[in-house]
Image 1 (cartoon, rainbow over the protein chains, first blue to last red):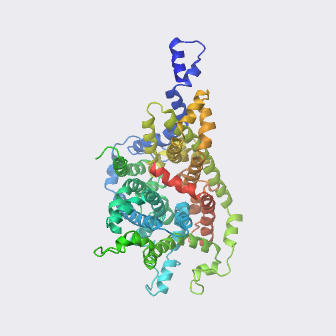
Image 2 (cartoon, chains in turn yellow, purple):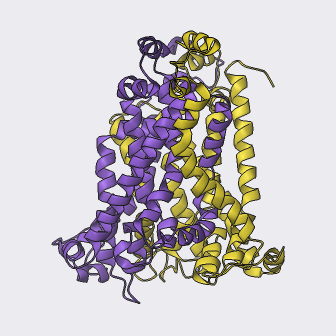
Image 3 (tube, rainbow over the protein chains, first blue to last red):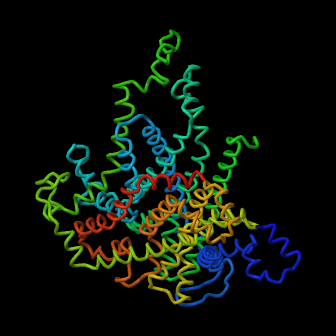
Length: 317
Length: 297
């Protein structure tokens, strides 16, 4: 077919219309097929991304276009204690939650990889926290962490471990711990199920060979499972870190940044400053300040994928 | 295998493959931790269900009744939710926005994925990488500029704002997922059709799509879940009560003053997650493959 087109074009046959030629041209067809996706992504993803950076250099307010004010927003944020508190909170939240999510997720994946009865059912139960919309489970956690009617306080009191109700969301450190717990709860299933899929691709013969050579269970894990799982861990953890770092809904549903800004993440602070207070420029500066961190996370993913090539028998590194 | 472990000198003889046969050992190392994790994972959901059917007095009085169970469950909270609030409207909004956004992004993704995998136009690899990067751009850094853009287009407080914006989350994911599926379809099928004079559109709709149905199902389930779950855009772009989606409405409309209506709140959360849980229980295998497939690709 393509040869015909080429010869037709070469001899300049008149009956080949423009449309016929175009409909066999890879580049033109590719362009046509890409139009819908490209249009949406350019209009509502790429353009806002640049507009956000631009807004952060202006003093735009809601309902008023801003003028260029250079780095003023950033200078202002540099001296803003609440902003730095939110950066600290975001890092704390991301690091603690990610470490726990990874550890528990991997552990759960290893448990699920054992021979178990009712495997399919267990797996679907494990996924429930991931399926229930975050805000709705956050509301359930809000109720579980209620200052008066918390079921946790009640149980601990009945066991005689505490005398007073725990003020889960009213005390800064308790509130941080509660949110991190809820985030871990939400994130573990995704990591566990994904790593489980990775585990199932590891050939059992490797373990058999290692066991015959006298490897312990731990050695099996450390020298076979873990290295083979590294690429998938890199990808999953990049996503996890990325979405934990930019988390908004869990905090908004449970504490809205309180008590006294103790749980404000950069995303919630940005929302508060930009949408509720109307300072679009300042809010954009906060959002833009998240970008370097996100780039770091993407770099981690990139190097994880690089290692994958080597595992598939490609270039060694 | 047990013969080798019987050798003296191998101190770790109970380890290795034989641990799979262990009885008591397995209870301690596998079943107990697994049961514990499962209880923690399932408990908030159980609590949600329980609270939504508990009569008011049992919610507040934790001494007279054991709070872990319910005596004389009531449908009051749920019926109040369904007949005396805007809840059905919010549910409808969520469904409407999710379904249309999913449909739009599915069309765009199918075309894009096909072009990237099979037409292989100049620069296809770069475009593919760009789409993957688009998946990594979180809504949290886009909602502020998007709010100004939405305002500019005059779409503020309209479901169309969400219908247009949600595909930015869905297209990168679905495209990536579908590319994986399209790659598994033999190229020979397409060559035959090309020789018979079929156009690219005919090939796509008559040959590729029928073979990629599992991929399409996975992509749509995943997209619906993402839409249903989406919060920050819906919170920013919608202001009037009757346009809101379930997650936003629950947080902003259901919490009135100091008295939290816990029963209705939990009922709202329960009913709001219901459709997804049902959908997912039918397609759990697709769901898992979508999740893992997207990461493996």
